[in-house]
Image 1 (tube, rainbow, N blue to C red):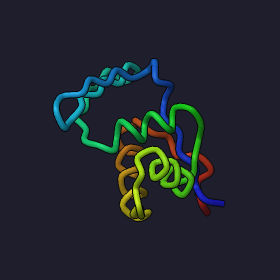
Image 2 (tube, one colour):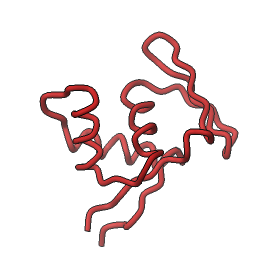
Image 3 (cartoon, helix red, strand yellow):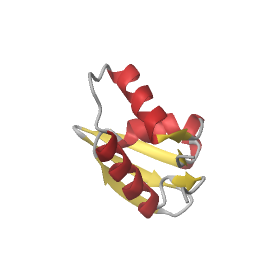
Amino acid sequence: MPARYRAPPAVALRIVPLDRLSVLYHRASGQTHVVAPPVPEILDLLADRAMTAEDLLAALAERFDLPDGDAAALIARLDELVETGLVERLDEPA
């Protein structure tokens, strides 16, 4: 079973766009992050429900009209978000 990922609810984050970057304040940790797209979009989608990387890639492609997404790049980005505590990995693969 592939891992699923989940972000905190939108009320737990404060995201302020600044040109091409965004400043993100994570209320639970008190940490502030400067992030680039598609991080805010990923967090928005994962706040609604836990998703596999494949499901998330499909949702991003549909929402932003992406012709072909890079699954490996998305998984790498999700792993970075897990390390920062902004995303939780569920159903850890064996």
